[in-house]
Amino acid sequence: MDKLRAITVFRRVIELGSFKAAAEDMGLSKAAISKNINELEDYLKSPLINRTTRRMHITESGQRYYDHVRTILDELTNADLSIMESSDKLRGLIKVSVPMSVGLLQLNPAICEFMQLHPEISVEVILSDQYVDLVEQGLDVAIRGGGDLKNSSLKSRKLLDIKRVLCAAPSYIEHAAELKSLDQLCFHNCLIYSLSSSPRQWLFRKQDEIQTVDLAPGSYVVNNGLALKQAALAGLGIVLTPEIFIDEELKSGKLTKLLPDWEADKHALYAVYPYHKEQSQKVRTFIDFLIDYFVK
Image (tube, rainbow, N blue to C red; front, side, top):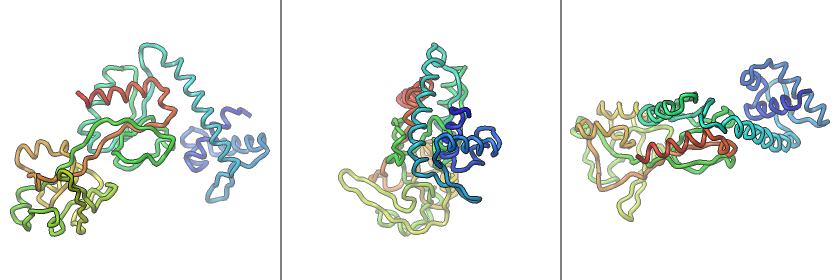
């Protein structure tokens, strides 16, 4: 038995949730995955994974073993990186997950500039507004909106604040009901970003006053910020969206700010990464670059 290979296979099976997924991820056959797990269980004289024809469950012993070997494998990776990245030039692959809209508008230009500075670095970007499990997907960094980290094995660093604006197209305002207070939003068609943590509840501040607005069901719900902007430009309703998405449209008058005395609750963008990636020079340099890029 190649013990290092066997525990690496075991880790990926647990993180990906199936023998098939681990086989595809590692470029091995499903039989090879099963063989490694069986040999590891025989060596340890303890079942690590209970499996049926339809599903698998990690045993209590398997969970303890996974917690230990994950740390050991991460340390081995860090030991390799300490030598491989000790030269002045950074090299290798960085895998990063980026939200679709803000990625295209702001992050992708930053990533391109980073690659020009470090030509021996390759970057694989996954553009998606969906939540991505960093460990399961083998990612180095994920760019995400603010909030508590649900996974204690992750760390985060703030990149920038994102101001959001309540606005609509003049064509909507002209024919819509009067809007002089937040309470009147319930009489309007509010366009909804479905992946928000509270899609039908908007929070606003005015000095020390805070008001939460519960929205009526709107006629348009979408999981992408730029699609939401297009719906607003078409005059379909009122949108609460990052100012960076609509700055030009506000200046040109294609969209108009509403209730400017109230400020929507700010969001922030963070670089999130697994604890063990903190030891990677290329990952640290990448995140440091993003922070400096948005401070400029």
